[in-house]
Length: 290
Image (tube, rainbow, N blue to C red; front, side):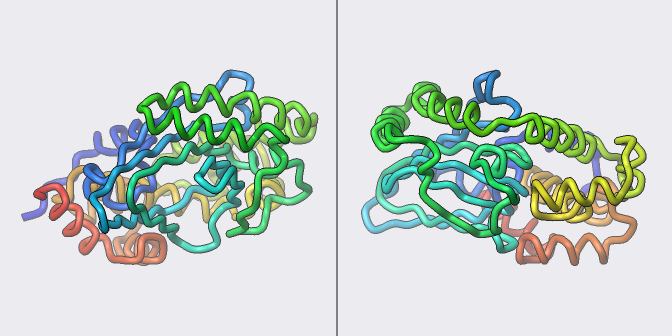
């Protein structure tokens, strides 16, 4: 029998930033280690947080993690070098792990991909390219950072890549990008705090702007609409809460994250995650029992 929904779960999910977007995080608990590191204050306008993942799987074993992406870009130190990832094109992103290894990633703020790379557009969704903008010392710093991550020192790994990001931000930061990133940060914070039923119209009223201005800001710097971001945030919250407690009442959960009816909630969830909320909850329950 499904449990009655506890509204405190919304607050708990919002405070669990490192796992928001990770599909069925309990399934991954024995496959890799995830550490989140806060950025240097001088990078706080461009960088949301750094994440360091390490893994050591048995010979011949693989593990595929599915992520429901946030509308942001990433800069990642990997074995083959630094790569710059624009916002993924698909509803989900998959990464298969094998053997042992690690990555040191930087999750950019909304609009940060365009700002840090010095682009005139938000980046083509799904684009992956070399991070040449980090300069000639990036290859050496990336290798050193990965070694520190493998040794279990995520803070040191982040300190190693931070000077590269600082130098890039100083080269590309402009008054226009500073203003756009500040406006987006306020908008995304408002979305995160939005009450159930918030629409783009009520969002713009809270921000003291117009729907057209907000739409243009998101189109120019993020690459998706405010409505898309609202929907994605609701799905992130719902998936996080089901991952914590698969027994939640789905109708109550739909209302708590901002849907007027369960049908629309189910449709958005399926489009983002690939399965219906009930099936997702069963998979999470199996992982928690394992």
